[in-house]
Length: 259
Image (cartoon, rainbow, N blue to C red; front, side, top):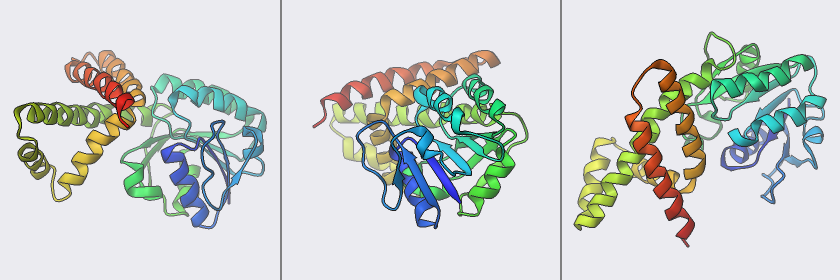
């Protein structure tokens, strides 16, 4: 199998490296000056990355996903799979499908359901859309767990946004609790209390919640904004989304002043 991985951020790098280690030929593209994962082929442009590929994994981030799909469309064709793993609103996923479908390729809307740095390519995925069954079969052969969700492109994205309300809200609670504990001079005690509630790996989970918010504050804010819109469409109050956005604004500021 030849795979194209678009976007070499944290998740894109992990998938490219993991699929290459599974014996795949992996072609990658990222316009930024970032390292090329070992055992992969770095292409000069998106069209070059798609050369000979049977499946395309888009991990560009939501803001660049539409442009990446449009650039890839000239190299897509019948029999190819285009899997969008970016966290975005269902409407954005459907706009990307409108680019992919006329090429004859099939699109899979993929929701990533856990932290990729923790699980690698064995991170659980949820897939919907016409390309979901094919994507599940192809990725499953490399050990990637993909659960099929009956429904069109956008269905998996909607589920991911519902999960984001809880997960990003949990991170905001951790940020607020630890900030209060630091001000009160009992940070170690509070850390122990939170970690105990988070289970056997509580300290590691707490670190990921806080560090992830600091490292990816801007991207997570876009995700929570999309989740807030989804809740508004359902007629559900968005109090936690609002509070989470405020803490992500603080986290973004703190991350900029960190050494």
